[in-house]
Amino acid sequence: MHPIGSTEAKEVGKVIRIQKAPKADKTVNGGVAASVLTNYEQLLWREYRELVSSPNKEVVEQRYVKDVIIPLLGPKHIDAGVRVSVSKEFLESVDKKVTKQRPTWRVNAANVDTTHDSALLLNDHSLFSLGISSGGGDCLSVEIKPKCGFLPTSRFISEENNLKRSVSRFKMHQLLKLEQNEISEVSEYDPLDLFSGSKDRVSEAIKALYSIPQNNFRVFLNGSLVLGGSGESTGRTSPETAHAFEDALKGFIQSSDDGLRTKCFLQLVSDTVYDSGVLDKLLQVQKLDRLDIEGAIHCYYNIINQPCPICKEAEEDSSLHGLPYDESLKVVKDYLIAATAKDCSLMISFRLRNAWDSAPSCDAVCLKSTNQTFDYKVHFIDLSLKPLKRMEAYYKLDNKIISFYTRKQKGEEQVSNPKHSES
Image 1: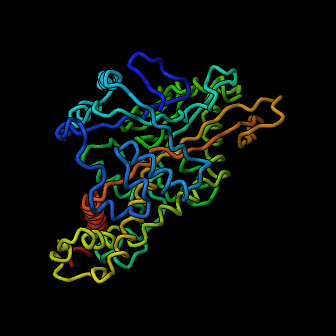
Image 2: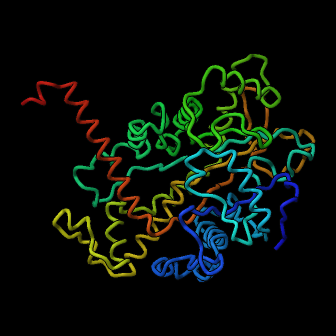
Image 3: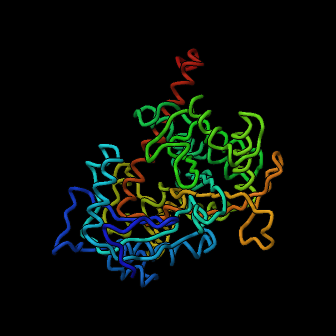
């Protein structure tokens, strides 16, 4: 592995992924974690030998991407990264630097784990591989967090939660986030539009993301953030922000009229998402969640060999508790892979195609309104392995989201039909 020291300058076009540790979670045995995967997780992923035998979290994440995700999404749009050795001094210096840039609640929750001796080095997908010093011109990149792009149809969804079949999880979660003051207003974005395969609906989805980015839409110019929040949810794009963004596009989108560059840029993004077809594979992986969490949670309790609290509360056993152990393992494994696909981000980078480039190596998209052709590349990022234990949290959050949304809908119906509600 290539070593990185505390005084080494940042490589252009590279980012380093460093593990964090909860402040309450102190390592043991001289800084070595007791176990990377739990016994049940080793059973879950047993067909992936190198993943199961990984000595630390960095290797687990890398092997998960290489062995599990790339065969599903393909190698073209994924960078598994390269392991590099790092010094304790380097990690401590990074910790000090990022602490100043992170919100207080995140600083209090976790910090950089300085006990590790390696980290993952990846390409910075907000830039083209040659960086910004190669004379290749400006690079404009968009990071989109698509979220879940389909409606569940599982027969294990309870009758009281039937709205899950007709309203996207994202739209329902927005109301709960608003109630909990996590967002200032509800987003107009619906993942069902982005994944629809309809050019018009994809365009509407991109416009909605620009209008209220929250933490689902960010834009970078040569690696520097020009729209959206740096790790935190942002509200509606203000006139001042819109003006500054329009100005930032001057050297990239050819237009003599102020106000049209942003419109052209959003069209460029939606055309690329539609033409690339990159979301089709992502949707297939998301749909590995076939039973919904309301079904998969029973298989989880089968795996960990514990009485199912959901069945105890309902006073009725689910038929899923009769599944063979291996089938329960497959259901939960597929659910966790789908959870990765629902939670990842999409990075699309653009660079104006040179007229003299007779043998371009990149895909291209033509922006007809300005008669410009752009090279583009698309990568999936944040493809993290989800812990098995999180199944319990997934179930609780899902129940919280659908219960709150259903209550709100019933409340609105009673307001609009007071006579009906009294009868």
